[in-house]
Image (cartoon, rainbow, N blue to C red; front, side, top):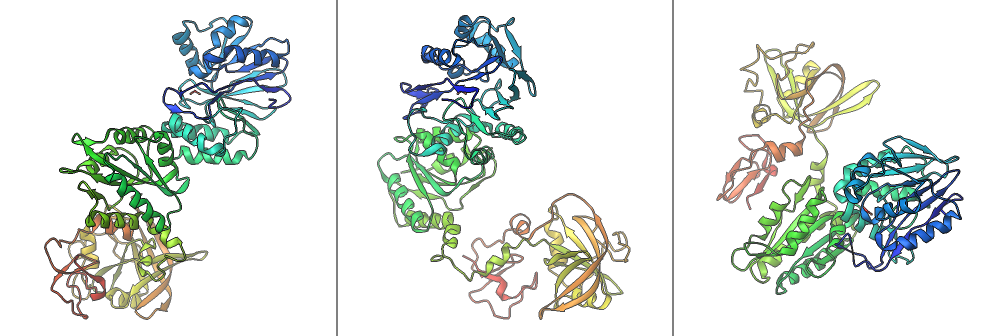
Length: 600
Ligand code: FEO
C-alpha cells in the first residue's frame, strides 16, 4: 500500500492473537503497522510483533527494491512494535537507530544493548533530514509509554502517530462498525488513563498541517481528519460522546438481572436515546468500559457478596477508576438478601474520581423485586431521563415555572441611606444592559424600604456577595426590614464607604459598584432602575454567590424531621399545622404563603 509517492506500508496483520496485550479480545485480529520512507536516505518507521518477522522483512525488502535502510526510527518500545529491532540491526548493520533517550534505556533492559555506536537520540523539536523529506520529532510521553515519540514528515504532511489513533482489528478485514467502535475500545482500554498526556499531544498536533495519520495499529487515516482529531479531543478530555445510559450488572440467580431488564424498558419508555446492558460475567467487559466512557450516565447493579460486592463488578469499577473515570452520573441497584451493602461499597470505590454525580435515587432489592423496589426503579428512571423526556415533544411538561429558578441569578446587597441611617436589602436582579454607555439594571420589590430610598435619593451601591458569605448575611439583609431595624447598627462607624457616601459591606463581597439612577421602569410589583456606574471596586477573586449556590451550600437545611405542616422555601421556617392560611407571611423572611411547601 502506498501512503504517498515516497512512503510505503510494510506492516502485517495478525489473525492468530487470542488476547491483545494479554487481556483484550480482538475478534477482527490486529494490525502491527510499519512504514518505509524512501528519499536520498531511507527510514523505516518501527518494527512489528515477534511472530511476523519474516513476513515483515519480506515486505520491507520488496518496498526497498534493492536499497538498504539508513535509519530505523523507533517510536515506541512496547514489544508489539519493537520485537525485531535487534534482528533488523543484524540484517542491516549499517543502519542507525533513531529514538528517544528513554527508549534506548528500554532497549538496554529488553535486549541487553542500546546501540551506543549506531544511534541518534532525538527529543522534542529535533529533526532528521532524509533529503527532500525532513522528519520532525514530537515527544508523546505516556501515549502510551513514557518513551514514545511521534514523527511528522513535512513534505507529505504525514503524522506517524505511534499508538495514537490506533484501533483493534487487522487491516485486511473490513470492520462492519467502522473506525470509531474498536478505536474507542482500544483507546479507553489502553490509553484511557492518560487523557492529559493525549491532550498535550493534540495541542502540538494542532500546530501542524496534517494530511495523513499513520498509526501503529489500524488503518491509515487520510479523509476527514478533523473527525478523528475531534473524537480524540472528546475522549482525552473525558467528554460525553453520545446521549444514552449504560447498565452494567452481575446477577447470581436472576433477580438482579430482572431489575436491570425492567429498568432498561423504563428508560426506553422515557425516551432515552440509547440503553446498553452488559452482563459483566458473560460479556466483554471492555465493551462496557468503552460504553461507560462513551455515554454520560452509568447504572451499576450487583449483589452483596462476602460482605463486599460481586467480584466482576469490583473488577469493572477498578477498570474505570484506573482509567480516570470522571464527569459522569452514576446510579446504583443493590441486591442483598439479609444485609445489603453493595451500593455503599460501590459508591466508596468511586472516591477520588473527579466530578462524579451520584443519582439521588438508589434501588435496594431484598432478594427479589417487590412493590417498593419497583417504585424505586421508576423513580430512578424518572431521574435519569428527565432531560430526555423534556426534549421530546410528546412527554415534555411545558408550563413548569421552576425553570425561572435556573436563570443564573447572582445575589447582591443593595446599600442605601435614607438620610438618617444606612440600609441594605438583598436582590437577585442585577444585570449589565449596555457597555457604551455603561448601564446597569437593578430590580427592587416595591414592598422593600430600599425601593423607596432609591426612588427618593437616586443613588445606591451594589455589593456582589461572594461564595464565602455565611447565612448570617442573608438573615441580616434578607429576613428583616430597614423600616424598623438598623441593619448596620454594629458597624456604621467602621464600615467603609464609596465616594457617593454610601456604606458597603466590609466582608463577604467580591465587588462593589456605585450606581446613579437614570430612569425607572414601573413593573407593577417591582421597579427597575436603569443606572449609570459611578464607581466600581473589585474586592477579591472569590466566586459570586448565585441563588443555586446559596440554596445548596449556605441555606441551612430546614428542620422538618418528625414535623407535619409547611416549610418556607426561602428561609426554611417551619409552620406546624394542617392548613396554611392564604395570607400567611413568614415571620423570618416575610415571604408569603406561595413560597411555602408541604413537608413530605
Ligand atoms: Fe501498540 Fe503501546 O503498543
